[in-house]
Image (cartoon, rainbow, N blue to C red):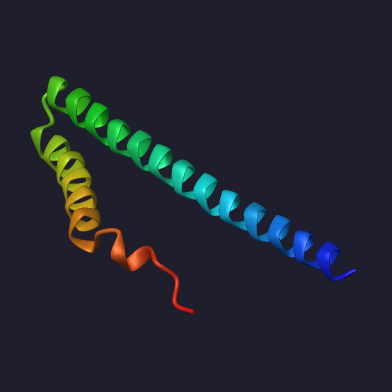
Length: 80
């Protein structure tokens, strides 16, 4: 009985860890796609002659990336 409970707890823990990994991967993908959308929007705006809007798009992208680099990975750890 105890072995079954232990195996079940380990399975649940493995599933939880895998879900956290999948969430992190999805977050990186969505962040990358959002950054690419901002860069493309800036390029289109600059091509159409609206430099102010292009600067705003690039500024938003740069601030987001720099903010994440400053924040780092350490703040993503969960407190027990």
